[in-house]
Image 1 (cartoon, rainbow, N blue to C red):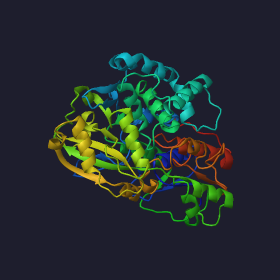
Image 2: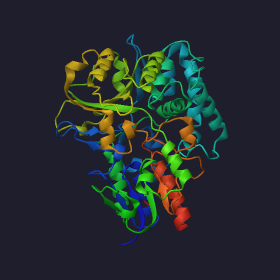
Image 3: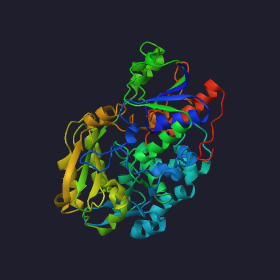
Image 4: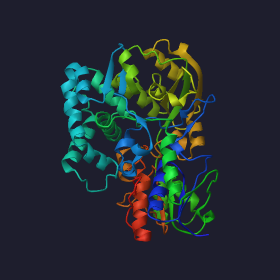
Length: 484
C-alpha cells in the first residue's frame, strides 16, 4: 500500500511534521520504536503507581512561544499553569535570585544590579517576537526583526565571552544568567549557551515558563489526537532499521539524529554528505533523578517555593567550574542541578487524595556516564534545602547511558541530539539554507539535529514538513488551528 508520507519517530518534531502533512490532506503514517509516542516529552509512572513523572522535558518555555504551537492552538488544547516565578536561583548565603514573570519585580529584587539586568534583558522582552522568530527558524535566514536580532546577538556575544561580568557588581544577577545558560550542557562562557539563556530569560518575563497539566505527555496526546483526526496513523512498538523496510511513499521525514541517516540508508548517500554526518558532534550528557516526597522541598529561602524551575550550582564562578569539569570528562564535585516540583502547580500527577509531591531533577555528566547521581543531587539539594533528605519517600536514578537506552536520539545522554555550539547551530547537520532536505529523493531530516535545535517546540518537524510540501507535493503549508 502506498502512503503519501512516512514519518519515523513520534517525538514532538516527528509529530509536528506528521500533523502538518496530514492537515495538508496527505495520507500519513508514523512509526515509533517506543510503546507510546512522545520521545523527550513522555510522562510515565517511573517509581510508584499513580505518580506521573516527566521522562525528560518538564517545563516548557517554548510551548507558548513556538510559532508551530501558536498556529496549532496548543493552549486551547492543553491546560497549563504559569508560575508567577519562572525560575529561582538559590545562593550559598541563603539569598536567591528570583526570576518573576514581572520583569520590574525581578529588577527590584536584584538591588544595585537590578538596573543592569533590566538593560540587558528588557530590549529582548520588548522585541520578543523578533527574538523568537530568529531562534526558531535557524540562523541561516534573513531575520524579520533586524534591530531585535542585533540586540540579541550583541548580548549573546557579551554573555558568552570574557566580558560577561562587565555589567554587574554582585553575584546574584550573574548567577541567574549562568543558571539559565546551563539549560545547554557545555562550558561557560560560550555564545551558544549564553544565547539560549538569554532567550529563556526573555521568555521568563513575557509568557513565562508553563507547566502542562498532567505532564508533558498532554502536549504529545494533543498532537496525536489531531493527527488521527485528520486521517493520520500512528504505529508504536515498531523499530525501523532501514529505509528499504518502509512502504512506498512520496516523502519520508526522519525524527532521528543526523548520523542515523547513514545507518538507515547504507551506501546510498553521496560521500561528502555522509562524511559531514559522521563529523556531526554530540555533547556531554544529563543524568536524571526523580523523587517522590512526603512534602514540598524545604527551601532555605521561602521565595524559591513559588518557582516552577530552580537552578542549583551556586555562583557564576562555581557553575563555570562545574561545567569545565564535565567538559574535561569528570563528574563535578559541585554539580549544576536543574529541578522542578510540578505538583506545587498540578496535583493531577498524584494518586487521588495524596499529600505527597514529585520532584524532577537532572545534572550534567560526561557522555555515556553510568554513574548514579542520586547522592550528588541529594547533597546539592541539602545545601539549599536543609532537611531535604528527610522528605524523600522514594527515588529513581537514570544514568546518562540509560537516557540513551530510553531514547536513541540522545547519544551518550546528550538530550540536545547534537552538541550546541555556534558551529553546529550554523551547520546542523550541514551548512545549508535547506538543512532538512537530504540528498536522497524525498527524504528529510526533522529531528533536533536540524535547525532550530533542541527544546519542545516542534519547529524542526514543522520546517522540514514545509520544505517537503513545497518540494515534493507543490503544496502550501496548511492552517493548523482547531477550527481549520
